[in-house]
Image 1 (tube, one colour):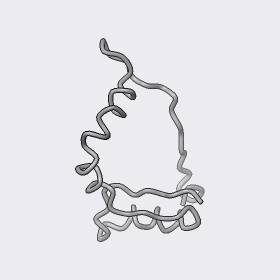
Image 2 (spheres, helix red, strand yellow):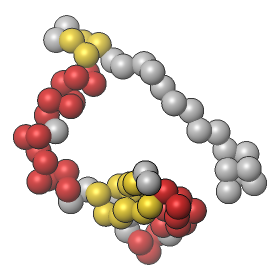
Image 3 (cartoon, one colour):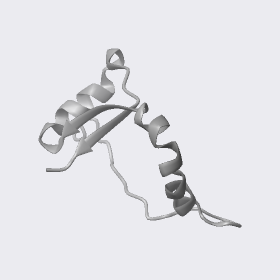
Image 4 (cartoon, helix red, strand yellow):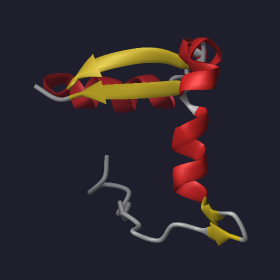
Amino acid sequence: MLVRKELEIRGSAFQGMSDHGSEFRAATQLLPRYRNELKTLQTHQFPLSDVAGAFACALDKNAHAIKITVLPG
């Protein structure tokens, strides 16, 4: 699909800064506090060997995917 639709995947090293420091650091410090709430957002998991299945799930409106995680190894 990446090739057929000529999509690009880009990483970003930029992290926002505020008067209180790095936004990335602030976000990671909040993660433990909201661990249970965040679990409900992760609706699907796929092994790296089935990354095509992860993309298919993301495109499938009937899957009701919110957060799809691809697990390494």
